[in-house]
Amino acid sequence: MGSGTTIKYEQIPTAVNNMNDISRKMGEDIKAAYDKVRQMQSTTWYGKRYNDFTTYFNSYIDDPFVKILNYLVTEIPEFLKTWHINVSNFESVSPMNVSVETVPTIEPVSPAATTGMFIDSDGVTEDETEVINRLDAVVATIQDYINCVDILDWRGPTANQFDTTMKASKTNLANTIESIKATFRKELENARADRIALESSGGGL
Image 1 (cartoon, one colour):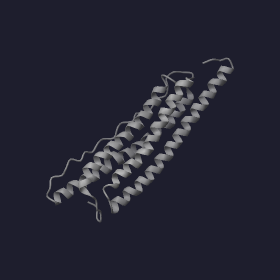
Image 2: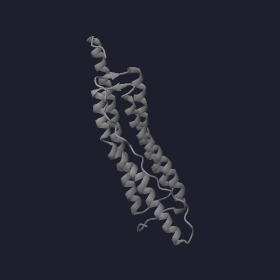
Image 3: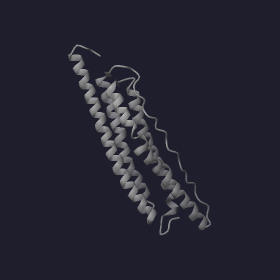
Image 4: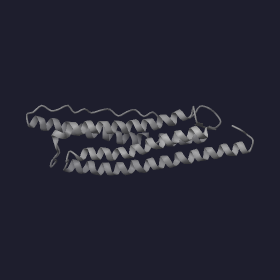
């Protein structure tokens, strides 16, 4: 237990269970965004611009995505679990179950194996919307997690460190996702323009 730290330890099991639900949803949304982009190469979009985007998208898997998930899914629940057990032992009462989950695996998207270029203008718009919605949900989930921690009335050096880390992580994640969304939209817009130019030249697809 950290020096000068206070926390509503009896609320820890409920809080951690809620935090697990929230961070699990975040992991699912991140994974779903990558899975949808991976699926696109066999249904609605492939070519150089697709491959360029996937290289860019993959560069963010370890940081910030896996990094923030490690913090939310493992480090914070592990700290709270240890705190709960220590206080329970001090009070000579049986600790309640506090579960700590594992970070989901996010697989990088491989470049499209098919040569040439293809974009299904109608289908790709639906895929674009789904990817954007998944990414937007990730940012919203961080605030849900912070709200969940607030019920613990956590105070002291460790709480201050959590607050500082979460503010920085939230800003970094939001900025990263805005950059990903902008690049995604730009590459799709350019791919659509490529198709129009190719069709106008009589080259077809």
